[in-house]
Image 1 (cartoon, rainbow, N blue to C red):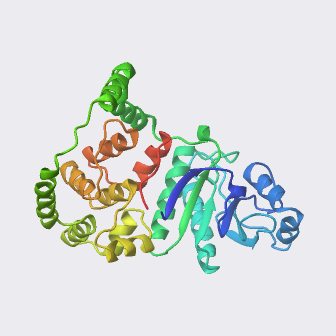
Image 2: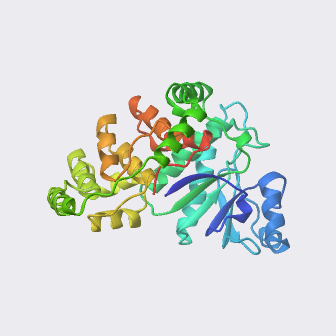
Image 3: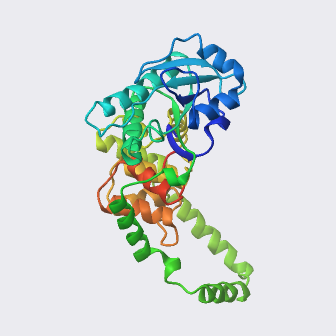
Length: 330
């Protein structure tokens, strides 16, 4: 998946480069900056002393030393001053400069903190949107896996109105909220104890004949339907898999294997990328052997966005993360 939001400690990420939200001196500080310097060891500070600092919105690179990452990319985000002092353009530049440095050093994976959202005071929801938009734009023309690392769920928010609307949608549809656990257990036990009668030997020939006939009438597979829908949409393959937050290697597997069975998250991601209405999204999922389930918050949240004709996969993933669900993509 080219862009993932994860809850983790960035100093433990096994990626080619991690990004340090540094100050202009590059000589260490608090928060993420201090944690990275402590984990990397004193050699990181020694190399940083040779760099001559870094201006806001720019980035510089060092070795990772004791970190699992090969590199540390140090970038300086803006201090929030109300939003009318060029903070957004400086924050975009901080992300963009870091991404360009990673690409120039042939990195295949990197991890960002949410820059400027701590002591620098940038509103977290706005900081998140800048991060997602800038990274998404860069990934349109680069093959790179990017992690946006959120250390504390309390530091992560989506719009309050959107959160409430999704929560209400889940409450209306989530089957566990309306089903007695005792009734569910009773049904399960009844099904488990029901006697099963074996088919008579004479029936096997008839059953096998029917099975052969059914197999001979197999409809198009998931990959066949997907490729057909891409052609019908007018998108190129690359446009579609990037919009689905799927990497090129996974898409190549799907394209080359007519019987490829994707994960549910991958199948749903393509339904979103193709902007399919709910009935067609259900059909595509069925080809992969899945269905939307009222017992799954993941499914209900994706359904919410499809029914509201919001096909922004990164916005959907932000909502899924906020509700502690897995994300769309490969």
